[in-house]
Image 1 (cartoon, rainbow, N blue to C red):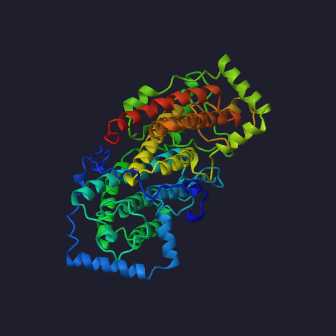
Image 2 (cartoon, rainbow, N blue to C red; image 1 turned 30 degrees about the vertical axis):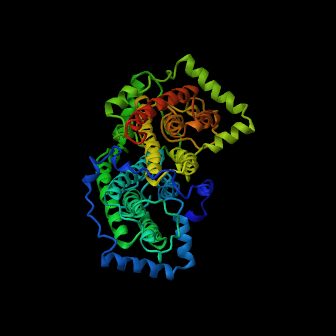
Image 3 (cartoon, helix red, strand yellow; image 1 turned 30 degrees about the horizontal axis):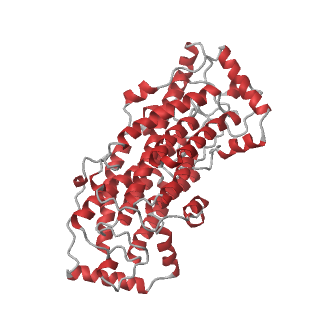
Length: 498
């Protein structure tokens, strides 16, 4: 999907050209991965009166004098905000990679290999947990890098080229920010480094877009070569620190192995319940059974364990029989409106997944708020940290209980969308949506009722789809709200609201 033609950004037509505040204190907002902004040193720039800087201004003016229509289009494209544009690009990459591997002739399934990403199947399979993690690492890297950039911007206070030299055209409205280091280059450098790790088959496309963003900042009169060089180096340095965390967060072991998969079923039988089984043909291994051990952002492993919901109704209980009957009756009486809701929130293969759906919901609110680039990055970081933690907490519960889906307990139930290949309890849609709604309601309180309505619709869509029981949905929502509260406790004390 071409980024410029993507429907995902049609909602951003109202994006403010000028932020309502430049957030000059953002360099002192609390860090997430870094210890302090000075952990990544940025050298003092040359004064604007220096001959070398004056030569850079000439480079900008010459580039502007040769501006092509394609370059002008790129300037306009990136003028809508690098943080939001890269969020859109990440969603496109997730959608493209959200395809489960096909079975081999012998009935087994190959696993995507990060060390051989172009093999069959290509790496990654961007399923919901992988996607939640990917969105969070991109957003956190951007946010950390921009806070560092803000610290040095206001420390050195070098003005933009168009401010220094009237011969430089301001092709994008200037927010009045110091230019060094360039925020466009910071975002481009940090994002490209993270995305190339997460989506290695897209390395060339990512590098091309990163270079385009940086060049667009120069052509727009926002940055000189030294502003850009300092920015991209800063972004890459911060991304490397974030990547160090990613390489040791437990994701590499999340697939498990055949012995583990069998032990989960055996443990369920030992508890006297029917274990979850894959209903695909041939049976597919369960999706990421150890994702519940992946490092969370705002929760410790002890927090994840403490917040784990109580067990679901026993598969032999009267309550479970009633819940199975409710699913069957709901599908039998399904209205066109309910079917539309099920399809709207299906978020299956070839889509940005449920976490991506909530990024899509968030984007126009961020745009309409007129946030600075660093505050926009904060919003997406908080949202995606909460949904990453929701994925960890939800997957912890799913594989602790290994509860079967409705069609397994009653084969006459026919789902209206694809049946996910992992246990039922609790509902991922409900957990993701409740955590996301908590964060977005904090960020945009005037729209809280809208986010709550989306949460309820996303959650009930899984009953309409025949995929989840009532208890999966209701318990998942409460679980997601509790998980979101951890993110909000950190957000309320990070200095950004002061």
